[in-house]
Length: 399
Image 1 (tube, helix red, strand yellow):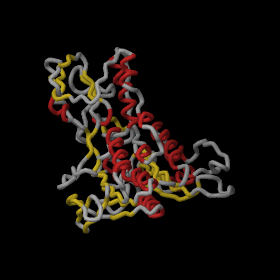
Image 2: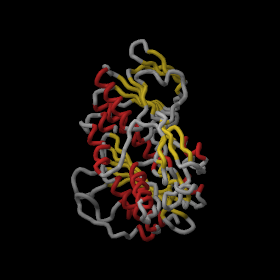
Image 3: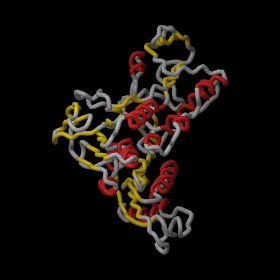
């Protein structure tokens, strides 16, 4: 959606996988802009906002996630947005088309904050990111977060750390004024990008058990803990194959896979969702940033004894002109030598290395095995000793 707002994707229709009309051609009745007010599991009925009641034999909950709002005065003023669904993106793009926007403030420095900073800056809008923490994307190692910060600064995106927002008011020189613990700043648009949480209102009202992460508990077939009820996507848990725990990681690829598994089971087939390893990535300007598995904190919380190494190298062979700086971090369990996770940031090759590490995590490889993986080599795209090999060799010496 940030790429639609930034006019890289010109037509919103390209973001729609399948229209209601296409569904109806297959005999599936799809109703959009229709709110479910209540589910009566005892009677097997769903009550819609207009009062209509629909009976069901099997119910699939795919209620997604809600954007978190800071809960400050003025956060609902015109020009203050969240970005979670396509209609949000359409509203933001419409606003930018109708209202002269010279400056934007983004509250939050996660995925959406980074992608939107690029989108707005590329539209020629002065952009500033404010964050409660000290660095952007704080799930990553501080070295990588510093690299992201440098990329923001290189593209003239302002960044303010340790900022707590307190109110949004009418501006004097611009449409809006953001009041914080560090003073005031004005802008024509403010994006609240401080996170999301599972939308489980209906699930809680039905009495469905939730996990400690706030998402709906499911099994490997996506069944919730009530007969005839399934849950998929951002509102549901997923099994993490590395930590051996149930987690909630709201990503579109996970939602798609869970939906397919539930669909097969609802249709009389048999399918299981084998879990995730937590792979994720984003791009900000000319920088790829990606991760998979566990970081040290998560590894320790899961009962491992983490040890890590972070290296900087070249995504292509050193003999080739135009080096591509790439940082790679590996995390392993000191007791067993098992790979637990990886992070990467660089001009090129970060996502491809993380995808390789995701496969290694899926297969349960050790650091020793990772150090000798048979990876494709050609000077324009990789060296004979890949950064994965080099990092794994260094990590072996720490175990």
